[in-house]
Image 1 (tube, rainbow, N blue to C red):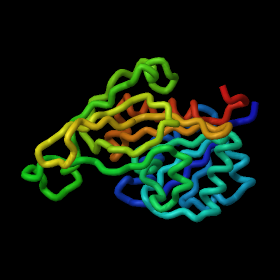
Image 2: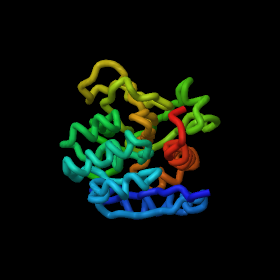
Image 3: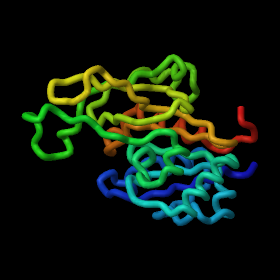
Length: 236
């Protein structure tokens, strides 16, 4: 039986530690019989032969830019059956200027609300809020999130703009606060899947730092998402 082929693409904003973050998951892929190729830029997306030979793309590229040829190559590969997955800004805050990429992924980071202004000290911890990632009814029965339970985290809580073609496995709610401009609680998708052509996309929004990625629930969701997104012989 041929080994499955995973392509890890990493780079972008250094604050999300793309090398160390992806190195957490490469041993999992190798232990599950994936042949792993690592690329430090998105140039590989424009290589049609390489992408056609890829069963799974694990992307960790926050912000940055992508060319029209590269995003077209990634999209074409997913439509043809290549899986795409990632976490946090490495997938849902990538390539802000590319409408085609946003359409592929189905959601876009908007903000992560911070602490009350009087509690802020100027570091990244200003945006670390205690919050719950709530598994939906769909998520309770889905192979990615079944049996995981709700996740209680203290980290960035992503507010995501999205469309309704995503299948939401978990959500998180942003409460009202006197220093914030919104007037009722807002619920954002926190974990979702998306069918795109013959391909599968999985997005997990927690994952700002290595300690969050090592949280047992978060790590399990990401690892299961890799397996679920991988190219299959059918679209079922």
